[in-house]
Amino acid sequence: MKRNLADRLLGAIDEKKNPSVVGLDPRIGMIPEHIKEDAVERAEDPFEAVRYSFVDFNKALIDSIEDIVPAVKPQMAFYEQYGHHGVRAYHEIVDHAKKRGLIVIGDVKRNDIGSTAEAYAAGHLGKVELADGHHEPAFDTDMITVNAYLGTDGIEPFLKTCKDHGKGIFILDKTSNPSSGELQDRTIEGDGRVYELMAELIDGWGRELTGERGYSSVGAVVGATYPEEARKLRNMMKKAVFLTPGYGAQGGTADDIIPCFNRDGYGGIVNSSRGINFAYMREPYSEDYGPEEFAEASRRAAKDMKDDILSSLEKGGKIPEGW
Image 1 (cartoon, rainbow, N blue to C red):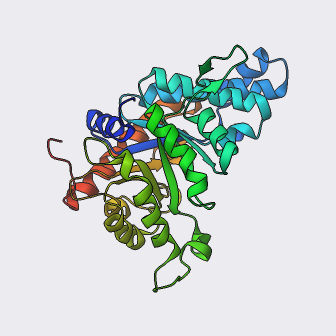
Image 2: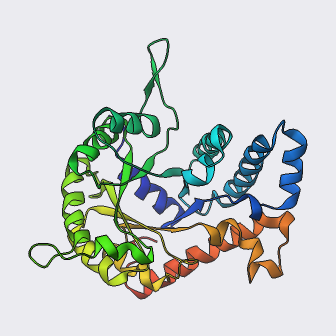
């Protein structure tokens, strides 16, 4: 059995002294023109040009931030909307990030039961059977996001694959979107909330995957936009790492993420996508960087995000010992 993923993730966070992750969410209309023009010249068709654009853009971005952040999080939807060319781009970007030593979180939000869940788990986290009978990794991401709406039947195949291959999952709990409360905030028996019931399940599912550092490879998605709910959930899931979207573009602040962390300064990893990917298009970075320097702008934005988060964690008394 491979090393526990939570131990690997916390080790990467310690190495960079930075609990942040950059989402890799390419939008073809926001990629600099010089990248797209070069891609069009090389490609045989417009879909292949998108693939080249995505790969070239994200490789440059990854190379610019690899020494700053411990992890990246490509969102599959931005790639698979372009069919097999987009999926190939996703695969190439995952491979490049892993070669750069980064933890890769595939934001795929998969779920099903039985053999279908097993197939999702094998394809994204484990190994798949090939025509000659042997098994190899397909996407080989380190972690993925999972929707647990189908209950335990839909989670157990992912847990087994995580245990066998040293991988991890983040299960949706209290998400950052405005309408999340339509279901997640509903009152259930005993005056609890649906997101609290999900927290109890996540805590139970993760117990057998707890690493040497006391954290589980089964984490939770908890949005920065709901700090009061995050505080409750932190008390309910002390061993879970929280993947926290909503910082930056969605309105969440560094102070809002403080409740997502335990008193030891661990337990959270904060995501920003658009704010880093396309920093060259927004102030203050657009004042100093043009489209040709998009990677430099992203690097500066990633540093600023790190400083912002650490400043708030220090204010909240949650800086890890030794940092």
